[in-house]
Image: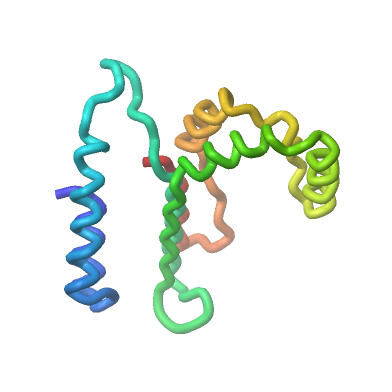
Length: 144
């Protein structure tokens, strides 16, 4: 059984989702299965990652009682498209955006974002570690 299917069934058992919602989620997983299991990559080559996943488990809720859980799944295609769109932004606008990002504490140079570098960035996300201030909290960042 896949990890996603197990998580859906666990949410159903915990009463976090209804049976109809679980059925829709499982159907969506099954639609995604053929594309993720097809071998469009060569032997020895890693499959193309489709999602950036951030999972946070904490023994304390983020504003209430009981344990807290955050589970974010972002399509990497969105990141890939954003990098391609950034190449269409005029240089003057990019320099202004860089200045504002730096003022906000995000020292990134948008002029250096190139579509050919995005896959390398995604590979490095798999090796990423996150430090958490709470000793019992668990944070996972990975691509799937």
